[in-house]
View 1 (spheres, rainbow, N blue to C red):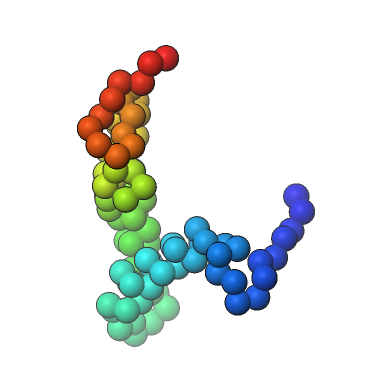
View 2: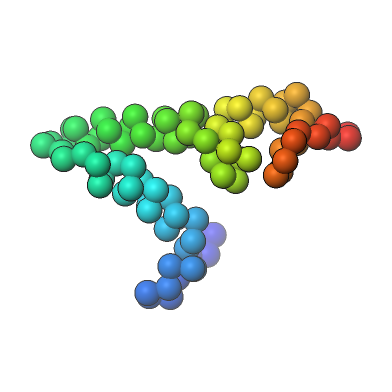
Length: 88
């Protein structure tokens, strides 16, 4: 594994992490006032579970990751628009 650093001041080099950080900041850090590190950890754990299991994602046709996985297991692919059967 070769370590590669992004260019300083260029968020495009690390766009997916930057997007996740933005969402986390908007949905957790800008909303709650924390009184302890343990409280931060509880809120982040709850957010992570919601983000990974429940929250709709634009990239998944506004479905939650769980819904998208169920559709994929059923052989349905969602891009933009109605589901279409995947031909094996």
